[in-house]
Length: 104
Image (tube, rainbow, N blue to C red; front, side, top):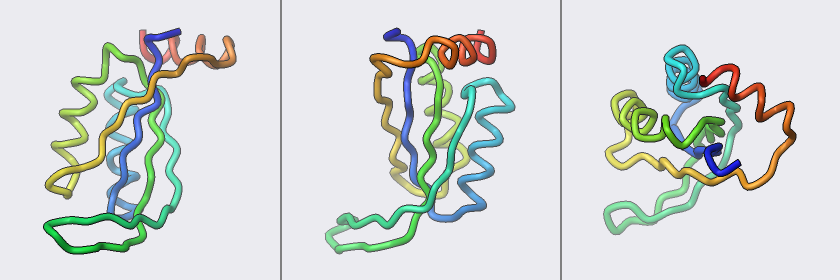
């Protein structure tokens, strides 16, 4: 179970989020990616920022994280993109099997 990950990435636009998602799935770095609008509040370069962004929820495996991170950095327009991997500690076995089928 510990090899599965949910990776969170935010993007500034829906189009950029879709491009990142497509690239990750096509290159078999992710089994699937969901995209949803979010509103983010954060500090950047000493200034309070508040923006609409797009959250990518990426289903992958730990052994693909390093390459996935490099691909996101390559495609992302942010200087410091959010790329956070969260362990999946439990899940529906048929769904985890499906991830295995798509990320051998």
